[in-house]
Length: 120
Image (tube, rainbow, N blue to C red; front, side, top):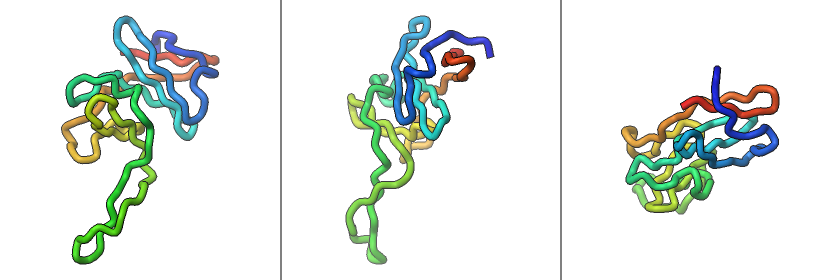
């Protein structure tokens, strides 16, 4: 992939992220389990800076057979929460958990020779 150098390998440690400007487009790059994920820093809801939001495991409500709440658990899926209105997205897929039509715009990302390259 021919791309633009967005960061260096040491800029994004395991579990970390950077938000960079690439030719006028803000891009959030995340490293999870050794894999890089990159998304345009624009929430599908109203365009907020989603990649700058809090990272947290998805909250799942436990229900009994009568559909009464037994409290909350945290799922394995790591979500990013948009700081403007709280829209959540899976960091690995870019998908909103409740609305399949709402997703983050992916950005191609590759690590090569100590550099992290993106292609818009």
